[in-house]
Amino acid sequence: MTTTAETRTAGSDFAELNRRINAAGLLRRRPGHYTVRIGLTALALIGGWAAFFLVGASWWTLVVAVFLAVAFAQVALVAHDLAHRQVFRTNRPSARAGLIAGNLAIGMSYGYWMDKHTKHHANPNHDDLDPDVGPDVLVWSREQARGRGFLTRHQAWFFFPLLTLLGVDLKRDSVRALLAGTVKRRGLESVLLAAHFAGYLGAVFLVLTPLQAIAFLVVHQALYGVYLGLTFAPNHKGMPHPDGTEDYLRKQVLTSRDVRGGRFVDVALGGLNYQIEHHLFPAMPTPNLRRAQPIVRDFCAEIGVPYEETGLVESYRQALGHLHDVGAELRAERRTRGQTRPEAR
Image 1 (cartoon, rainbow, N blue to C red):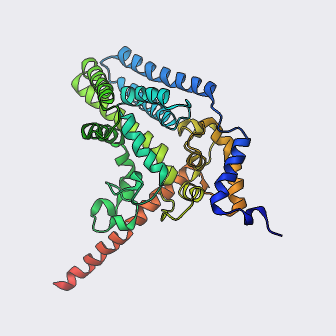
Image 2 (cartoon, helix red, strand yellow):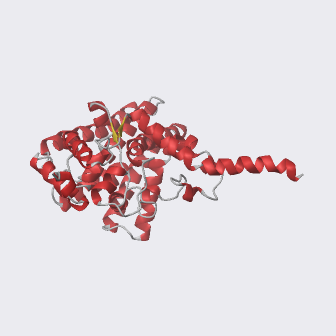
């Protein structure tokens, strides 16, 4: 007798999973959750800046910088949910809130990031189509690594130090996108981004001494970059790279991993620890991802699709291990050249 899984084609697998998710009501909006979450995030951001002005020109302001780094990252995670229309059903309120959270609050172009992130979701881990794995300072495949030098050979050691620059890189790329005119609402985004830079830098250099101001900027932006990078690093790094022949369900599941953990991990990673469920249903509100996980995991087992889930520390180990493996051929070539040089003499 033929089973349901055998008669269902690969193209209809996602349709069946989607039916089960809808039957569980997991695509419904969660206005209560987001009212509380956005309220608390806004309170943390406002409270952090209030503490900054109250502390004033003191080295204790570096403690405030640490707190604001966390607040900035949490605002970025809210902006992520807004971009996916998890908060509001329609685009207009999502875009308005996203511009406030992204451009004005943390100095990141909402339009630039949304365009980049949409491309990532369409083709996760695809060497040519996913901007998150395109060759840059770090490279994610041995093909991209060929011909590169010292940094790529030892890039796993530089991963965490480079994350300290992520916040600055997002600002730089935002400005470049606005100057290039590749962002919708270019004028509005430019005004809001300029307002952020003026307010942020003005506050820091007017309240603090020059040396304190520089220290504050370094601590705040570095920790913000590290925290932001740590929320995204476990999701796809070290997972398979697709060739473009996969159907939607397999493309999203096989390139992603979930991270085990309790409520603390859920809050710290903004729900991105349920990366498989998020990629399959990007508009699903974050608090529903935990409930969707057993449905998706059981369905993947039913149709024979590998489902990757690991602990938080192990996810970083796998990502760093992949970076180290990418540079293996370059290190081998380096050793070979070092061994042959004495013989050439």
